Length: 352
Image (tube, rainbow, N blue to C red; front, side, top):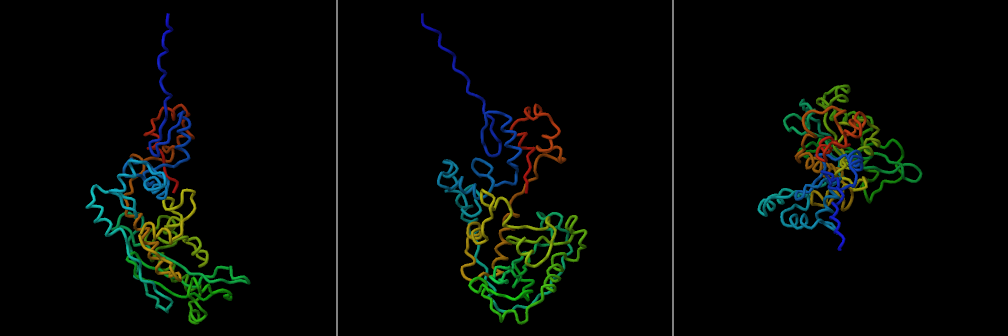
């Protein structure tokens, strides 16, 4: 008599992340993943499959890399913008978009002397930068450095440039070095000793910049919620502010070198030159570095990111204890186990 055939076993249940679609054998592993991945509505996502990616670089690899996702790659090749990675409904819309997405390079200032332009104070509040009518425009800054010290490796601020949101030059000056210059780095800066004969003292430069940034607002209010103070945009702002020997509230800084979606997948910063070519479509720093050119490029990157749709995280108003990490401290693991992947994602928050 033939033995009875054993009934087919059901495959083990997999627990799938609602954001990046990674799958786990155990629910507890999914929960740990959600606690450390910081998935949120602000992450770049594929317009085809809606997969979340940590950065635009990883999204680009997903769409056009050596091992792209099949269906996503096919759709994107026909309907996607190679610069901003946005997906469009039809080729006509894509063609119209490309005309505005690829920008032209700004005209460099060169190394001639330029006058200081007195800023016009803007009294609008900066509490919500995504509402055009409520924000005072952001200010972009870039500095060029020369070398001091015996080996020329000491960074000395030699030139500073500020522009407004309309790319108008509002402040430009050469800065009198506080120490003897031992390396003008001419190949990069284009500067010589002649440029510093009538240079502005660093203290006066600091006063002018802070006058523009604080926009008539008190330091206390600016540190609290910004008030009328302006957002400061740049690339590697910590380096520029350090060379200027200045401080500005962290929550008022918008740094294209530190914004997570613009960084490499290992959280190392890209160069401004790479970001400009990849996301704006033109080249900079092909010869000497021009502060106006760098200012404009950093500002354009910031405005491109700011112009994207930024949803509110989660549903309704959530307190810190309502987030995933907060619940992990106050809830029992059994209660977390009862949440669906979508509910876990709703509680997840970005860490930037």
